[in-house]
Image 1 (cartoon, one colour):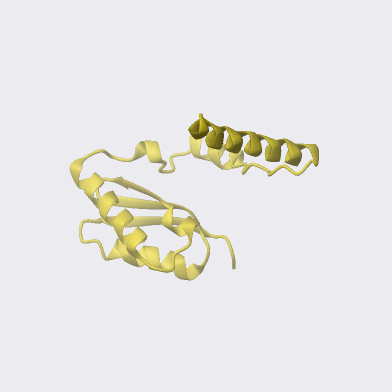
Image 2 (cartoon, one colour):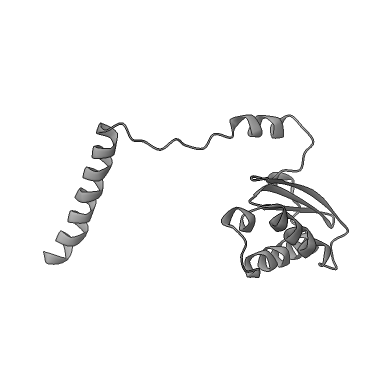
Length: 127
């Protein structure tokens, strides 16, 4: 019985905190990228569902993701950029914090010998 008390108490405490935040009117605004999603749907832009599942393209994407994650000092946004690979052509999409991060990621792509070319669609959040 004691083992059940701990998790139950935690659930009740979380529910109370959430209800308290709602009662005070302090709710977080959910990110809204509806406009971005609409523009992606109506264009020929590369999106995640257009990526290739060929062995070579999957290997390129895997190696680039490993390189990005192994690079020290990148923001969470930079670590989570979209890498879309089709026929050896890599498209990078998403936000990064600085021009330096953008250049670092671009350099990692250019350093990958299997990449034919790169479409850099990264956007810098801060000037």
